Length: 205
Image (cartoon, rainbow, N blue to C red; front, side):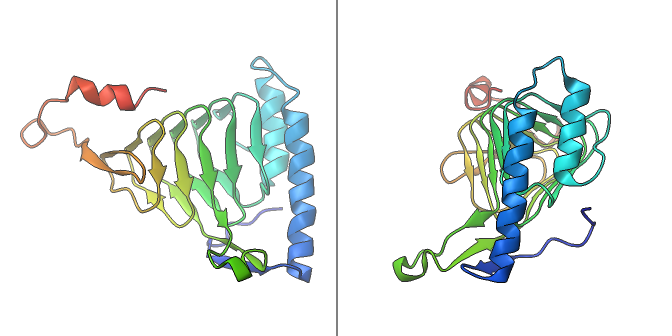
């Protein structure tokens, strides 16, 4: 059963006893996601049941996920209330992924906590996993990628196709590769200029 311990950066040597344990959990996740991906949109209760088994805790009844969905760990994934995950999303949570309430995740989004060393001689020596935090009421649009070690601040939007490599401030629209702040989303008419209608072209679902 998963616990609510703090997520921290970790390095798993390959080979090692620790890696063997991780590999067993990965096989479990692959089996459960394959079972989940046999389901359709109308099988919402069964999707929640299998997803709950994957993450080691009962997911809230307001959680919605449209298969297919991919995960390579599962037990370090925390999900809040009224979270929506669209089709073909991949969440690699070995480093820990914390998704707060009311988060919207568009199709083909990648949330990846793990990576390999840059040095060629070390590339197969270990896996490094860094936590990702998605705060309340964030919208991650289609095809975006979130890299390990970042926090996406409350109420922010990650535009379609963006690659987030550093923290996103609250109430911000970020876009591009690597993602950068395009403008504030603060709902204060005295300090926030009218929206540029062209902004929406980079967001979409």
